[in-house]
Length: 120
Image (cartoon, rainbow, N blue to C red; front, side, top):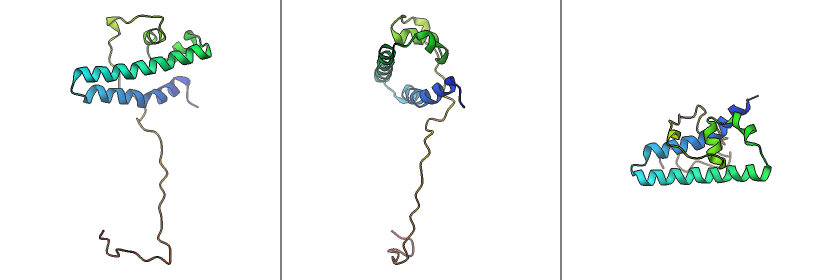
């Protein structure tokens, strides 16, 4: 069974990977920052909503986050400081962990091939 921190890493991995992809691939700085701010703002608003509706104690959440300073800033009980600029590492978990089911269809016995030599 995975630990809670490992579950948090697995859930956050694809989002962090997408944010890093935007950070590394968008050439225009203003557009890059705007996209990252929109992502962070939406995620922070959702986190604050869950905390408020479920009456969660931030001290119980703190052991599961990578940086407690981020927790206080996201939940609105902290403030942004210039020292909050830090490297965000590539997530250890694969970006896509969903396994797709492959369905192979066979030709029925009564059906002949339309292109027997493989040309389409």
